[in-house]
Image (cartoon, rainbow, N blue to C red; front, side, top):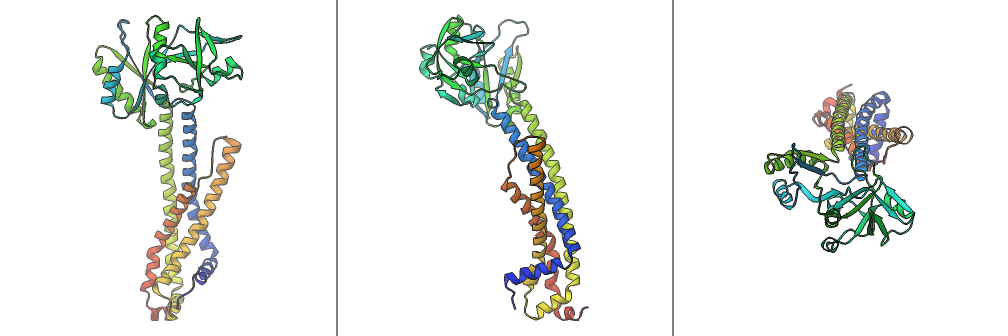
Length: 397
């Protein structure tokens, strides 16, 4: 005679509650394993969020190659042919733009407001593509600005606040080293990299920068990969390619994200180590579940025989023992996830002040691991119940 699901659950719960010590120790083993897994996933999520926040505060990862002679003469400027050679040699390149410093401009003025010690940069048309910057107001340079040498400029948010004091800066005229520039856009304020602070940045077109500097041009390439993890390989291949093109020159490759890459690699190593600890703890909990299931089958042999005699199928008997293991796994796993969430929430708001948000994905992964261990550990002992002889079971004491 088959039992309804509700009666089967009630019978399973009665069996578990009949020996609270045994059930509690089994759930504790699961609790420890899931706690370790859940804590590892939370740490991974927090550190990933921290790295993402640092990446968002600066331009997208890029490398900057410098080619120079040790004699100080004949310093080459990397141009279109170099960009083509790099693209052909390095398939992981996402974008290459040209950027330079305009040293002839040291300050900029709008009416009575003046900003000094700012950074003035000349850029190519695809600068936004390489850096991933977003325009806050107005527009970026267009092809006409380059072709017609228009005296237009873009400022970042910090410089806009300093000069315009809350006014709309678009189409306003500013003066830089005696040159009248029209502001056409405002972009985000970002850092240049580790320990880098910006005091305000102004951008002009590369063509116009060459014109106001009397034909002098000092620029370099910004080479952006598709992913942060490709920075190291990009630096190596960029250096190899440029050494082949300039064998008599010295090559130096800078970047704006190596510190974040090292931080990410360290975080991944730590996460893997913690995950191994968590899995070992779960395996120990699984061994406990298996041992207890074996002991339970032996203790309840007569009960199994009676249930078989009155019509219970082998599958139902087997399912009951697996169900006990699953319920204990759910109890231990649920308590572990709730406990670790509470500890993480308290730590990130009261002690460390880091971004944290409960992840249903991480909770599902941890709970799934707990249930998988419970089912896997109890399966073989539960399978033994299908091989019990009914007559011998009824005669057992």
